[in-house]
Image (cartoon, rainbow over all chains, first blue to last red; front, side, top):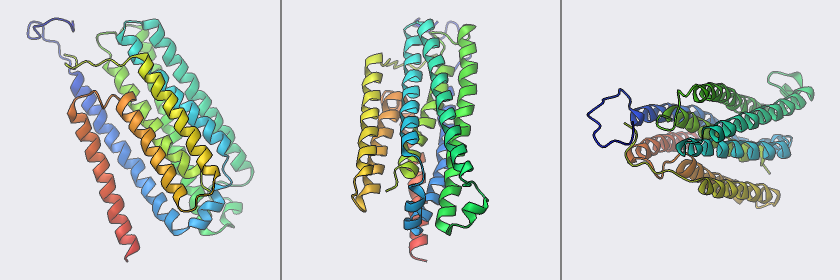
Length: 207
Length: 94
């Protein structure tokens, strides 16, 4: 279907460029959503430098680094899954998407352990332990929970979308010649990775 | 029909970019351990920006896609920059 010269002969109602444009517009709104939060973070970090420093030391850099590696690798597997489908290798494409799901799951499991350890130490929004700390630290942990929480929600949504895409590929509804759904899912997943690239140094690498 | 200028990126390119991303992660974690005072945040954000550029250009195909997508990204980046600048001007000089 894609490799004939005269496109006017059979006109199929399909607009891959349009679909991608729609996805990018959506990503635009996502960038602004997280951008607003990064803005709040920037202003408060500027205002409470010392407190952000003290609070940031309490986060586990090791788990943050591990999750960074996991998420970067999941981005690689999604990108390679598209390449595999373009080459007509459905099996490899699916395999790489399943790998992505496993990485996403590892990310969320790490997040679960990280959050539960914080919560068991009495640090969660509104906890007496946290409220007894100075304002800057309350703000730091508030932003930490909201921003990594919203990011985690995006990871979960991404996993659901990838699961649907896996189903589509199995049923040949996404194929070598028609894979814009997989491409758009990839774009979304890379954006989730992109946001983490900034969350990681801002929360876990404070010195 | 599908996008006319189909530029398919091979596995090798993706793996090289992934290795570069891992290398930059190692650098940023190592640098964070060294006390560089006020440069620490600057270095961390510069490395994050380099990593983003790699993800956007290669993983998200922006480098090989039609210019309209670059325009989309440019507009969202510029919007964010303006919002940041205006907020900080307001915050610092109020």
